[in-house]
Length: 92
Image (cartoon, rainbow, N blue to C red):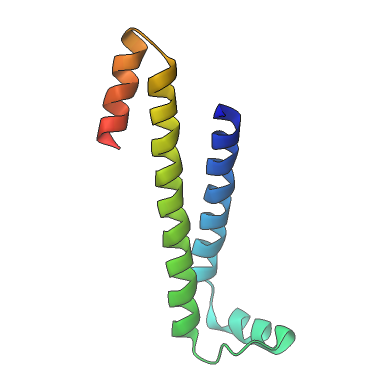
């Protein structure tokens, strides 16, 4: 379970980073991309807003995955570590 959650968080971080980079690309690249792929990206602002929203969505999924991961750790450890993980979960 822990390995799956770590992999999930890493994949979501990569996707979030990819869409955040797309959010910052210059207008010339978008014009070339729209000519090659046949996409209707005539307005750069719409494309940047869309990719920025997708990046925020994946970032929120990362936060959800981290909170599930910390809750899982909280339930699996006992003693001093349990208190530490409980406080980390409470902060997140």
